[in-house]
Length: 347
Image (tube, rainbow, N blue to C red):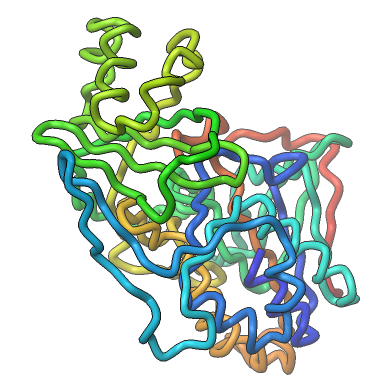
């Protein structure tokens, strides 16, 4: 969505394709780092952005057993916003989409799932999309895959993926917030337990770290044992773990860390998690994806606008981050070939 905003702002005719009807996904990152806040300031958006519900981490502590240790203080960083903003990513994406509506060059299509790439003379020439109104073909001079670690665009591209491996998975759940809860404590570590608690204003979004592939052992141990482990690992939550009624309230985030050895091919570019899936540790993923979008816009916007990319008139189709980090149930290569409407964006 950030790349779509930047290109629309630059006057490049752009279509953003979002698989879902909204941006509401629990697995999307919340941590907006000072570097990203600086970008929002440079775009003239920071004042309105910080009016959205959020909390601010100006210093960061972690609990090691019964001891709390300050591990970061953002007071001295060389940035205008000396804090990390915790904001649900769906609010961030909705904000960018709303602000982008003032750009005539930008079109955002919701409920538009990319099914496969189209090619012409060995070059990616667009995408086939399934919408609520049926199949659609979007032709573009450049397709940008920004659709996350389970990227349909990446899978369809044939680009080589280097799996760097991850030793962990994460169990994701929410518990209520109460008066007197600790502030600015993000991590809770014991000898064999790590819990991250993300402040979402009226509840805690919790991440319980387990060994890779360990979900079966957690289920086998039973819900009571899991709740006991949560209570022992983050003691302030011990009076509300019974809010977890069943394992249906606990979602698995399968962590992957990988990267494309080459991010592009003629007519196609991947950025963000589609190019380099990051560990959730530190909440860097969303921020690196935004840096990718800024770099892409800086390098390509003028060329796209003037039509000097690969010697063709420039149009760009961008698939917005749209895939659950658990994986995309939709596979590349599907889609009906009959009755497909052709949509030549920008022609």
